[in-house]
Length: 354
View 1 (tube, rainbow, N blue to C red):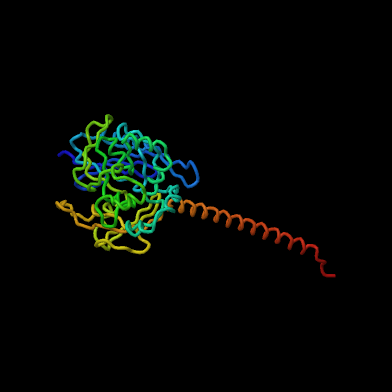
View 2 (cartoon, rainbow, N blue to C red):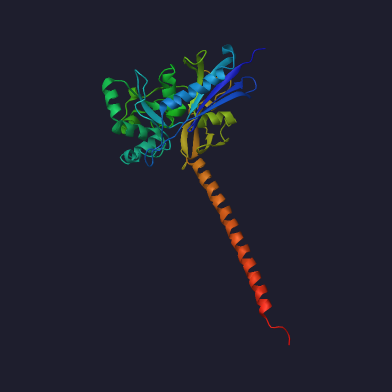
């Protein structure tokens, strides 16, 4: 009996991972991985080369497809690093900017000029973590974008939209991604005109919003033996929510990567102090894929954006502490030995009985 396989592609912050799963058991069959360099060209700036991201995806998929028959693969899902953005040319596909990674802080100056109505409408605080401030900064500071605007060829979007268009799947993203940009109103299903205006962005520069799952597109590459049927496209944290099985209100998942993110679905739009609303409709539908997904499939995120760095710092601090304790112990033993020798010498100097 021929195997039936599913392909998962994870476009992460520091690496591209891909894996084949048995469709019946969901057990992994094979996996591949490519590291993607992250650069820090200035304080507070975090960037990646979009072409290296693309080549990492192509390489990982090519490696896995080389080991299977083309008719064994049922479909492929793509998850990505959420809020990271870039600009590219609609005609050539050439990147006009690096990928500005979600950790990047350059948008702080832009956000200082944004009014208080934006957090109220989007449900998200004014933080450079989200995509809108990054896009507004690129628009104001990158000369290549001005030329593309004049030519009518400007594309702005998250990394999944770039990958999908470059691989022939069209210029589109999903609602889970849009909910992380600060350009979607809470519970909204399309780019919000008021939020676009606040950041000086235009709808035609942004990808079409579509569902997170279904018959989304066909992805093609000359290095692949056949097109990939793209059947899922969403942010990595929402994908992890589905993968962990936390699909009903009251259930939570926590993932530990470059950041730590605790995510759980709610019963509808809600504002919880300290938590961030996000679209999780994809994980709240049944396996039978009903014709109309539930409305207001929202969840909340509690992020710790520097978790891996913090853990490394903690690890370094613990190593230093152990070394310090060992040093102090050695000093104490040395002092104790010297004190013992001094006592012995003193005892020898004492006059004996007459």
